Image (cartoon, rainbow, N blue to C red; front, side, top):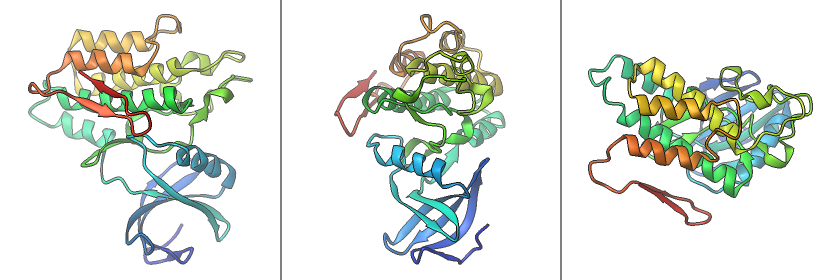
Length: 262
């Protein structure tokens, strides 16, 4: 636990704690080098955080916070990264439940579409499985929709189950192949988790759209061969369920320049 005003590594001034996970805490800090706000993720175990740092540092796509450095201070491991200002999908859902526009799910679908596109780039361009799609790990703000907390993310070459990889991510959203030893996780494992996330949003927000429910159901099929092969397919179908006031919606990948348009 670090106190407000404490200076970390002669660079970061702690402002407040903004998050807590199973093995880590996240602080909002002022970065005296960059002259702006940064997020500091702190853990008592250096290896998992170092792994997360190296995965995030290798990425260059929309929807993923930029990471700055990894270091050890007072026996704790730290990763500094871009502070994303906004609200979690969890908070969006809570606000939605009390709003008068509960029948209009456009904003919710828009967030999921952005997540799908980020997932597609992670899977296709970076060979990364995120494996922890849940409302508290998604932030929607002025700069867009971001995935945070890559603690469960793995390289696809490491996705062989061994004794099962159920320990990655959150049980509620875990795909069947993560629990069966000897099975391989691939992009369709992330698709399953996105479908589980969609079903959670649909239930919590009382969405009645049958097409949306059908998309989520197919994502969560136990058979890999039945699921959508990529998150891009899911994004395209979701976009067909909503309207964007006649505007072309698209998102460009920083690395390859590919644009998904609807």
